[in-house]
Length: 407
Image (cartoon, rainbow, N blue to C red; front, side, top):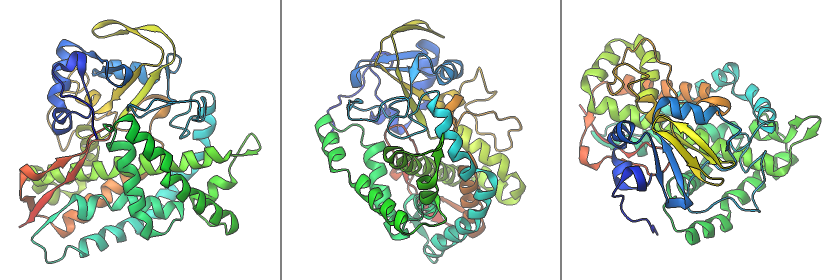
């Protein structure tokens, strides 16, 4: 499967799928911030890594020198068969201006506070259903039995797909987000199978024949400048909703539960002071922000970063580790300390610039409800085997195994 050798120098040969990064990237970022705040690697055909908050923000806001046409760094680079810029393969996250604004604007109503509040009762009932399934167990995996089901089934509900199809989504997300260390040959073979594309085409056909009050019918009926969306636009946006709306959120829920299981002082305080939950959620997002986004260099230019001038070349990848920006001591006091009642918290967990996550209302709701319901059911729990905790590889980081013991 993987063709990637171990990393020996993070400044000149980093790899976001290396076990050292997967298990604990924070010391790596801390060291780079001091010695080489914009690292470079020849892997994946050339990729850069800024780790200071200011440099990450500078790239995120620069749509002239950086294109969003591909946001997942792997050995498979964009080709002529992909929908071209400014739309990209999964609009609006892969879209550049000016098309990006149009594609983003049409989705905003679906993720406004009112429609998100309308799906909260479903989310809460789902959390209770999942917890009911653990009743009587003294030990279980909080990731696999709980966290990983919540955003999948919420997105399936919003799209109007059968709830029993959730496993298809989980398999697709693992292939796209986590299995980036596959060889190019293996990864292209998976793309050619296009299981998810065939699945979405079938659901779109069903919705065209029988329109519903859901996101799929919303996209089918949506227009830009008086024209219905192109088929590639509809499918790409639905793929985006699966990737951006599922893996990121289950990772945030899982990381929060892992923290509470391994930090009893914070768990006890949150149980005793439930009014702290909104503030705690923001600190969970800052401290364990799951998303590292990517850009591609649009044209040759010299990027002036914290470590000096970087001669970037057209087609180079660039990783945007928002979690590293959230741990920058130049931007946050006590950046490497989890402060459950942190008063000021302008974190970047949802990104920066034009691509800031439009689903932030949904993610906050799911994270809040998931933690609240878990603590109501299990106010006292701990890790049963800390060494068995496993974290995901790739650009979305979260625990995939959280073995806990109920006390």
